[in-house]
Length: 105
Image (tube, rainbow, N blue to C red):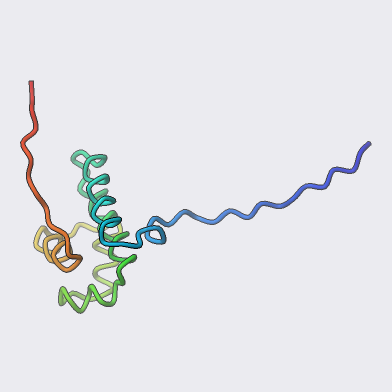
């Protein structure tokens, strides 16, 4: 039998926040998540949490007047943040929502 040297591959959990480097990256990420989410509000909250981690949760907490731990929980995808919280976070991240009419048949 041949001796086969097997290399160990170390995997790292994917963290989208590590790849959001610019404000444009963050805006495009949120736009893509909003398109993907459909009516899944938790998906959007988690996307905002990812952007918040990329920007810095401590800075966001200061800008919104909300506690850092509260933000982590609300934007985890498991929390249920109020719409007011979502609007504060979006504004503090330098983003804005916009409406677009969809065509239904």
